[in-house]
Length: 151
Image (tube, rainbow, N blue to C red; front, side, top):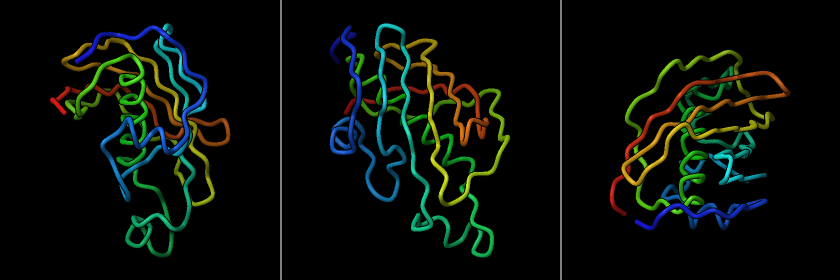
């Protein structure tokens, strides 16, 4: 593990995201990072939701709704990218969820704006507050606590 890195990054494309996260299709849930501020411990990313997502085959065939747990996973992956940018390596795994609320359904054609602020980060894990928004309205929000496994 290397220590915290104090430099700011403007944008991160999908090729760079794949270098930072161990996830792969069909489980990579962040399409682009729009902004990272490692000094303020903030990150802003997007997930473009399309009808081609494999989970829409069964959730639900006549009423495609993105599963809430996958929105939480998108927030967690966004937090994992923030940790990587701060210099913390290893595989981030969910430890607990707190005060998670699902406020708006997400459907094909939506773009989810994933905003995370780190409350605590260390080489052993961290806690982030995340908010997923669609069209300026909160879809999902809550705290995500995770641990770090060696890569």
